[in-house]
Amino acid sequence: MGQAMVRAGSRWGRDLLAVRGAFAALVMAAIASLVAGLILASITDTLEELPGLLLLVPAAIAVKGNIFGALGSRLGTAIHAGTFRLSRRRDSVMAQNAAASVALSLVLGVALALMAKGAALAFNVSPTMSLADFLVISALGCLIAAFVVLAITLATAAGAARFGWDLDNVVAPMVTVAGDIVTLPSLVVAAELAGIEILTPSIAWALVVTAALSAVWGLWSRRAELRTIMRESLPVLAAAGLLDLVAGITVEKRIDDFVAFPVLLVLLPGYLSTAGALGGVLSSRLSTKLHLGLARPSAVPSGAARVDLATTFALSIPVFALLGLVSSSAAGLAGHAGPALSDLVAVAVLGGLLATVLIVVVAYYGTLAAVRFGVDPDTYGIPMVTSSLDLVGAFTLIVAVVAVGLA
Figure 1 (cartoon, helix red, strand yellow):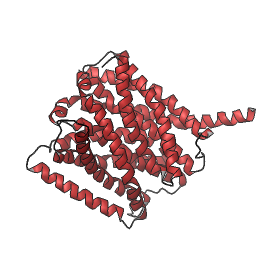
Figure 2 (tube, rainbow, N blue to C red):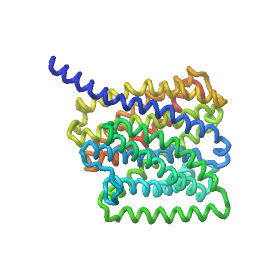
Figure 3 (cartoon, one colour):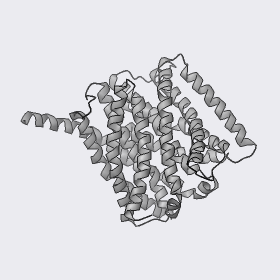
Figure 4 (cartoon, rainbow, N blue to C red):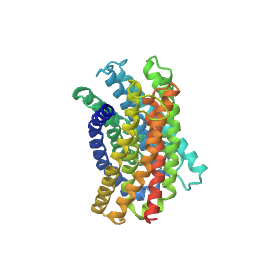
């Protein structure tokens, strides 16, 4: 018994030491996500001028997290396995992953626009933008953001390879916050081209054709890894996009509450990204342990997996509390109306705890399902986890807002 306790304590100590990097990255991500929140709170006029844009926001942000979170997870596994090399060769692991990620960004941008318009009609969200407006804002915004987030992801991977960081612990928060900060301004820039009677349809058609050619090129590429990533990623990313659109509909239906308290718009991107980042960290760590045989793919989590699940809960409370605090402070400095500080922190923590319960379930069993079905959990785990948690996050945030009495 004594030796077992010593071994367990040693394992906890090693894992908790490793997760310090995840906590620091999550805190940085929570604070940096305020930039996205403040941008969102400042474009309420644009949200009213382009009805349906708020529906698209969670999905467009999630596309970046899904694509580049999975990219970082694959590179993290390659670093652990000793197969990652910094190289400019077109057939290198890094180059094929980078090319696939950019192509997926454009293809999913077009797919999201089509699904968003369809979802708006199906769920009776009206009025909404035209399909051409959806295409230009979604596809062009995703493509602009893709190049920036790709550079950040590759720089993070290079730093991990050079300085010995554990990429599994830092890539999900870093990519998430990069997606938050970069995607919203990209959507706003793309929105400037929407609604122009002559220009918008032409740009929309050009983006659709380019996306179709990119999909064909990637799916039938001679590069084995690029082809595999495209073929495995497109179905799961499309399914994830649908979940994110439902999350967007959930928020769009409560737009009056968010407009009445713009501080909730400040909180929203960081809240969703924190839930997604926690799930991404957990999924990425589990994926690496399963790849390396350090954890068993069992219905009941093994000892190594239980450490990761418990650590996720330990990380969630202070991170969500900090998010509520800094969101209230930033909104106050920017002059955005909102509830009392204690109420906003209560919303963030209560909603965060509800989301965390589902984070550990979705992340563990989603990664396990990927292993059982013989697909790469790096490619499948993070998109399904983060998109499920966008939907869960939007729902738990609204539940917390109602429970605290703000709506």
